[in-house]
Amino acid sequence: MINVRNATKSYDGTLVVDDVTLGLKRNGLTSIIGPNGAGKSTLLSMIARLVNMDDGEITVDGLDIATADSLELAKRLAVLRQDNHITARLTVRDLVAFGRYPHSKGRTNENDLEHVNRALAYLGLTDLSGRFLDQLSGGQRQRAFVAMTLCQDTDYMLFDEPLNNLDIHHAVSMMKLFRQAARDFGKTVVVVIHDINFASCYSDHIIAMKDGKVAEQGSPDQIIDAGILADIYNTPFQVQNINGQMIATYYGV
Amino acid sequence: MILLCLALLSAIGFMTIGARGNWGFIFEFRGTKLLALLLVAYAVSVSTVLFQTVTNNRILTPSIMGIDALYVLLQTVLIFVFGAQAISALDPQIKFLIEAGCLTVFALILYRFLFFGVFRDVHLLLLSGLFFGLLFRSVSGLLQRIIDPNDFVVLQDSLFASFNSVDKSLLGVSVAVIVLVSAIGAKIFSRFDVMLLGRDSAISLGVNHTRTAVTILALASVLVAVSTALVGPVTFFGLLVANLAYIVLPGAKHKHILPGAILIAFICLSSGQLVLEKLFDFNTALAILIEFAGGLFFIGLILRRGVR
Image (cartoon, rainbow over the protein chains, first blue to last red):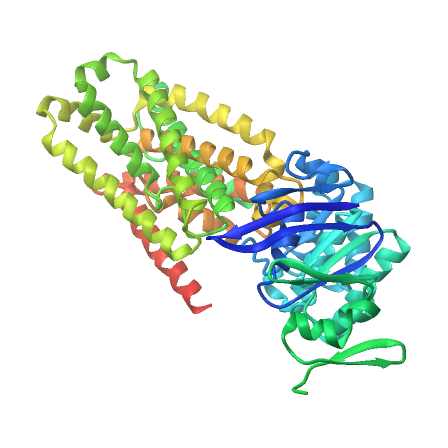
């Protein structure tokens, strides 16, 4: 369980995350949606201790992220932000193997290798594992970073726009992978996502943010609603039920 | 492996080529020189590679950021304030330790300002580093001009270190300092690779990024102090060997890059010094050759980056 209490963050006097209180239950795929500048990424980064809070408290399974041992947290919670840029020449396998660092501290054993191979296979990177990161396309690199995060094998995984740069095929398989991790392996996956229909079709829970606050939260059926979405995005929406999936359209209606 | 053979070869070459006369004397004379070259190679390459790991940038080096100029400034200020007599009375080894300590503290303040402050833009950072280097050199120059002439002679003597006239009194303490730095480095060695991933990933993997970065930068500063004290500032040498190591070696892991860079540095220094002594008859300085090659390399790196 991740508990966020009164989390507040401002940059240069502008409130980005405004007194957010939130509980994220274990197991399941949660999507955070909302317009640009709503504070989604900042909230995610604060939960992952990448950004300091101005005020408030966040606990992960009872561990206060501000005071708990960082290595201990790294065994429970993994995060991937957007725009990962590495200057060093690393192979895909090297990168993915870094996910084992909290467990092995650089001395990889058999068990670690198994995790690495599994993560590579899950993301279809086995054939590319010897390639250097700078020889990959943007989408392939994104998948390599996701593989590293999976390889960390934590109960909680946070992803900031994991579908960036991915084509439709890989975007769908990544969302399926997240859902599988949540349903079959009891993981808790939180993604910040822009594509409302991906959020609608794959999430167990959706959190909609606006102006640094949680505007609405609930199941996809509750949130993917023309009225609620129009409020959040200041854009008219139409929502259709297509074979049991709630699909939102917003193309100039 | 090939690098190791080359390094051994250049060491043997340095020890034997053109040797005439008493072997005992030659061993002692060239041996200390060789030891000094090895220490400098170690200090410069390790400090540069670690610095680049922390800053995630392959163009920045401690020297380009003006840290060795800061060391010279520090020495100048010490003599300017306390006078040559007080300074000369000090044991050179203790003096060196004090200076290295001060340098580390100052460098950390500077780094804090540069890396954790407003500058996120690499070009701005580079420019400010060059600016600080220039500032430190100018202030040193100014102080050296208004200093008491007697003090100046003493100062010049300590600043005159070069590859030909290594300050031998500092060899012992340099070895001790390098062993100490390496011991601390070995303790956190596994974190070096993680730092390559950048701040966010390092934190996600449970590494205390700020503390590790500060520790590594402190180690790098001490190493800069060692090499500057031994042979004076060598601006581009670290850049040259670190980037050669990145190009020559297959991976970016520190267990490959660090020994590789040290060996490359040692090969460059010992064979360079050999060529200089035998071919140019001491007519030029190794530092000049290095700066020339390193400068060209630096321009090449920036141009190639610009194209990308």
